[in-house]
Length: 159
Length: 201
Image (cartoon, rainbow over all chains, first blue to last red):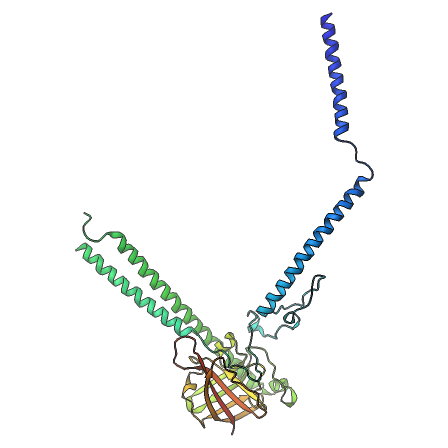
């Protein structure tokens, strides 16, 4: 009798557990409602707008920064820059065409060239080559003198 | 066993002297490389100028009528300047940037071509192409050749100005201005500029 009762209790627990599991599953993973995609899309849209606003502000700042840097460095792009909605104004250096160059000049970096105008300064013709060469000679002579001293000291140590 | 000088200071001294010699050698190699590149560029400019002289008619067609602003690619030979008394004979390239001045005297962009009306500015390094310019004197003869033809000039004014002074001015008459750094013999960036002005004879 006891065995039968235990078997019945076990069967009830198994069945009850299965039912309870099904109920819990229903509560936890309920099927998506029909209007949820729309809500998600709206939320995503709001998030995207917010991100776009942030990105727009950031890109505008970057554009101004790049423009100022390019104007300061006189960078002349070879291609016409694409316009963007964040462009406040096109810098003068970007609109000016790239300087005409031959094959020998194609590999050169854009270099600001002084142009002749009334009251212009004489071009900078200073060159550090002589100073560099002299510095090299001085360093070599100094190094040789140091080596000679070191050898002399070694001979004294051995002696 | 441990008598005399310790071994470590000698090793350090040997390493230090080697490093100093290597640094000096690197500086020398860098300077020599720059000079060699200049020589190669100078030869290339001379060869190109010879080609241009051979096809002078074609080069002349590039000139705009009425002595308007000269326009040519940077680095292109545009003229030749000769000072017979000093033995100076150089091919002038367009532009006064580092690359152009390495190849030879540079014709300042925007200035007139020698032979045109207006100021023609030609600049070069004092320790290379215009080294002899330090010995120029009033009345010396300067000869220029360009697509405008050959012009014989007479040195009419020699002056030394500060590097920051507005020394170049627009003239309506043909004027040749040869500029370089001053003093000619000076270690490091020279503070002044030598400006030699010449007018057609």
